[in-house]
Length: 154
Image (cartoon, rainbow, N blue to C red; front, side):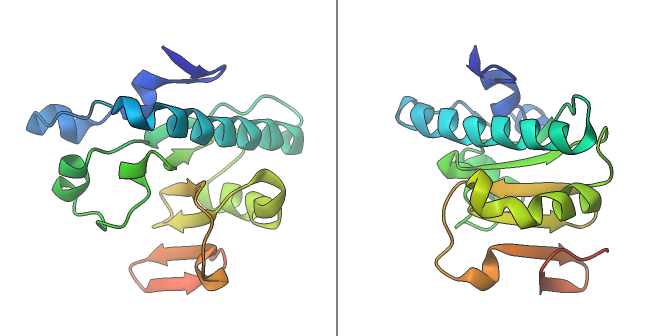
């Protein structure tokens, strides 16, 4: 089932951990509309990355919706936006590394409707559609050094 033209429900809920640990990661019907809105954010991001690159830039979703049980199983923060269907972790290798993707998106968070942008461990980009109450948490880097404001190399 497609949530938007380029993002399917299957990729939004896919999880190797859920499969391996037999955790039900079915999107609750009450969160379907939120998942569509989050994937619409990803469509805007995909279009902007394509504009910047001058060519299509496919996005590889590494984590979208996580059931509360899955979120706990991977050791994620219980306040994460993933169980709310409001966050996506992704890569876009056709544009560059996660650091390069996050740097490209950082000046556009308001324009694109990104509530939070995180460059995580040099391995993926996290975006959330939930607005941040604290502006310091809007654009950050998380690495083995801890959490830093802004997009930094790791």
